[in-house]
Length: 385
Ligand SMILES: *Cc1c(COP(=O)(O)O)cnc(C)c1O
Image (tube, rainbow, N blue to C red; front, top):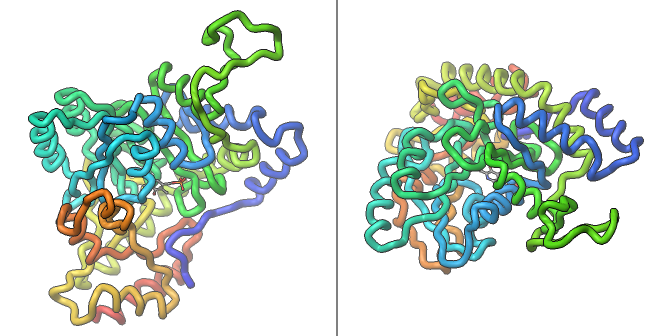
């Protein structure tokens, strides 16, 4: 099976991890801060907080923004469930904004419309989580403009977008957001096995996220309620978690970062080859916003079903049978049983549901060979001819 995504691990990655195993620190050593610095510097952000997953990063990002009971978090329905669940972890209510039919990201028009309604019912969101789907940056300038007008905070879920750029600045620079979150799961652009990071330019938010990452415990005397009893002393000043990243993960991350640009370039090259080879098929190919440079995490095709005799499911299964590990990103979150129990219904977000009926993610990863890509292309030609 040709997978839809796959990590790239080199000998220098392996050496970096082995070096940690032979060192004094398996966790809470020098590699964590080095990885944070490396990513923050690449993105031109002030602070990086490395954690054990993007899900944890989203959780502590929401907590740092004081999201809680009685608050609303809005996100897009076309995302992984974690972008919404982080609001529920904090006791907030989650709501969704439909997608733009061209970029598949949250629609700015739909967002503005929903904000105008919410303003009248005093139900404005405290946090909006935008997702750069497939790596394509959202229209951050416009979303930021709305955040200023309606007073909400922005978290960028950039799990798909490290290495991408928006208006010539790295995704993660947080120019138009409070916090940006990356995932380093093995299917993503770079990996640490499991892992994530939150970036911000706000010192107060960075300090809060650091606290929530590690039990709410501080060793900084200035933040304590009394003078330290002695050099052993620490204080728990909030309720946090153990969301720390290990040194093995951080060392792997530092090593992977040295190839990030190469990874994204290769993904663009593969995408361009797909663009050319699939142009004549009854498909809608990914549309690239001219203002931005995608991280190109996923290559999603949409079937033009009115021109095809088979169903979406039949085409998906035929591709799998031919050894093509296609996938579907994502089942709209509001249609999940857990969210249906909260009152969301099919039909609530028609663009997201239409996307779901047509979308297929086809294989795209750094190590993909020309032969593997040709296999995918000829399978699509055969099935859709
Ligand atoms: C992968 C992903 C996550 C979760 O990442 P983990 O590191 O696995 O927790 C969250 N949001 C999006 C959009 C993702 O693709």
